[in-house]
Image (cartoon, rainbow, N blue to C red; front, side, top):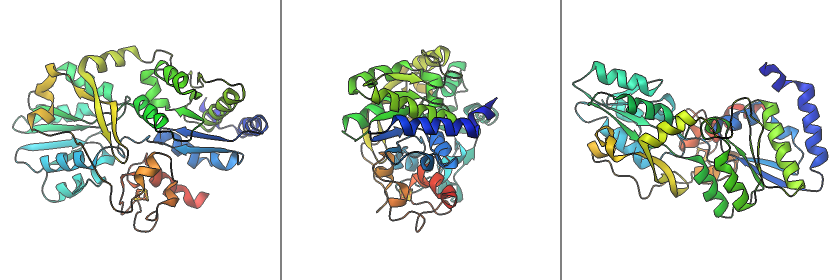
Length: 358
Ligand code: SF4
């Protein structure tokens, strides 16, 4: 079924439409999803577009925007006697401000990779003599899993260090900052949870057309065509081109679980700064599972990037990865300097991986 979304003839047809219908306008469109960047780069979509349309990546990689100071805190926590830190694969290599989880592990810290939070809870049940802390990272897509585990009632030696972040406030932050953008391709995975609704107010307030798109080449191209048509027609709505997965109201069960367990708080985005109401922290009634309370971990009020690292600009779509002076020289996937070169969803790592195809 998915093959039709990669059909060459259809792709050519939609590309032609984009060229034809965008004549006379110049567009700068931002997406905020690592998987969209993967699709765009892997399938060479930028090369198919006319020169008057530019698609830039925004802060779509949760690992990349996790503050270095939070990575330091959790890495140092893993070195405490009796503490086990669990996390997902990508996170372990991300450099913090002072250290990383892989460095802590090499120095004897108990850091374990898990596929999901339920595995972390299982470890806590099996090893009751340990305090198991799950580094809970991700956008709205992973927050429901964390919420469900908390609602299920994990053992008392389990807690999470929540660094979950919300995408629409980050989009609003970028729009408010006056970034030159003509529209957004809204993230497909996040939208399966939050639906289309949260973007509607944004599109209207900032008069910017938006589209929810999936992850096949045709999905992305249809998304771009939707923005072209909206701009041409003077519209600023939110089209849903990903109706096979995204509903207007989102996943109401997942949203309910998130709302029961988490409350919205300001959050620090690495390379970007503090964004109002863009994070999720555990509600007071679940504080026994809140690692920041249990271990006195304080949320960052500042953060910094390595010297000369352009991740901040990359995450805001101000520069392309290749414009960073460290790209492909000091900074490579084997020796990452900035977070965007580590994660599979990081723009620099994606561009680096596929640059020979371009
Ligand atoms: S090349 Fe490395 S240092 Fe430069 S922006 Fe990308 S991740 Fe950051």
